[in-house]
Length: 111
Image (cartoon, rainbow, N blue to C red; front, top):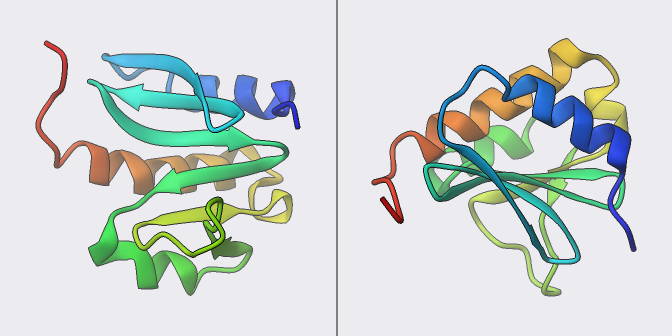
């Protein structure tokens, strides 16, 4: 399934002021990386976020969050945000910020 180009553009906008952002096609969608660490991805019309295992339960408790079960089993530390949870740019930005907090805690890759 192709990824939602409009959502990809919105995510790019949310990350536009961050240095070190790159894109990579993977998982059949688009992943956005911060200094080589995955922040988020677009799979179909869903946003996939890497929030980390310590913040997973909090993220899952939020409305419109769902387990990231791309492989058939939920991956702790990764969540999907359903379209209803990111209708506004402000809501999308809050989700992206969650993932940036985690990726910012990791060592930079590929430098």
